[in-house]
Image (cartoon, rainbow, N blue to C red; front, side, top):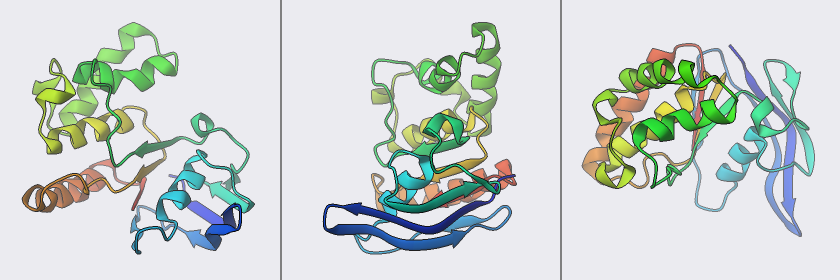
Length: 191
């Protein structure tokens, strides 16, 4: 699958340099974790890779192709945000199916894809619930399933464990390792 690469990537907000000339290359099947103090540019770097921010300079490559000027939907990336960004008024099923509908997948094909993604993350029994009825770990799995259902080449996770208590955080770390092993050759970049 796709290797993620950044070349001399920079992002400036006025006089502040949030990302300053980052060169990065992921390996095949690599589980890459970005560490650093708050405010050092980790989230900005992920947003640049995803196409949610435009770089001041430099390039982002996915699978050897320059994607710097491509919109997020054309990059075959799924991003899971710190807040999980679930729609509170939608069921788990509808939350997971949302990117399929947005991509124009025929309605009759969506249920199978949703059930497969939910099953891979052990949340198939939660499809009729709403996010407020779920634990933090279950919400995290819903967000991961929503990302997985799109079959992206790259997964970007922005502080996926920060909203969990210490005990659940330890369990979630193991869940993420298992998730990465299940999806095999996809890239997984975590901040």
